[in-house]
Length: 403
Image (cartoon, rainbow, N blue to C red; front, side, top):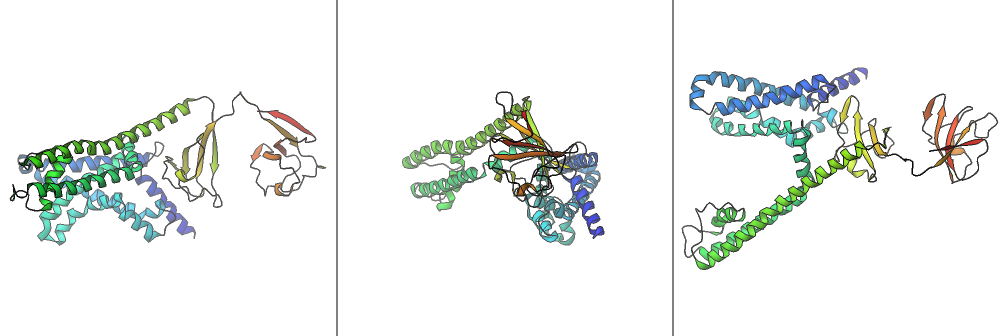
């Protein structure tokens, strides 16, 4: 069991290093830097190799650079596959590895090096496999995770994905409908151009998206009038996804601004809460917690890693949450009562759940030998405990505390 825990701890540590690190963890930051450099060097070598004069003079060097960076991508993929159980803790090892392999990042990582090796096993498809190396450029999305300013783009698209999909669906419907209409209007006049209903797809696409190449165009009066209508309609169609993305950026930066203004206030208090297996928050995402508007999750500490509290982040037992909220301030006072438990007090030696107290009384905290204890129902009170409570009833031997 100890060996298994040690093995899992090592796997978790490797996962912390290869994932996006934080400033205090220099091995992780170094790995991030090497990963970003490998992506840029690989893409630069691939682009330079397309120039015939450079290919003839520096071809072997560029191919060597490509081989080294592809080898790094291969090792990186294997490490991420191996450490997937540390990333998806609720899943078994095979399911965690499969979830990473089928994710967008996993597929991009796989196709960043797989086309390089396929010609060795399938020489006949070397030209086709080389075309798939363009997928390697999508590894740039990993750099997107290193910078918050770039990460905003991903957050905006993810938050507005349903609206964007709806607008794309509307554009596709209009594209097919306009293609059918243009075929009906122009087929007799231009049978070689509009040969069938799908031959107008190219025209409808270039018109609706306001590109207008001009290689296919209507010549009949009705066709031209219909083309004018589609052109005006296309301006509105392009404006829909553009407006959705613009609104997403406004919402995102407004939220960031509110948080920054919130943090600059002098009356902000932060508390630290560690989740247990019995807590209802464990296993939920932050956006599903239903927190009031005045409370924010400022940070999440998971073992040695600090996690940015985005809405889709899932909480696990033993996670430590830093919650922020406005302090009570001086505009309103609440009177608490403090009572030091004596030997003859009937509360001495009883659990909180067994106390005979009114519903208008609540124990806020218990101070015992310099330590503050959370007053859950299982806590047993002892002689000398300092009990802080709120009550609208009279409590004997209790002094008033104003906050």
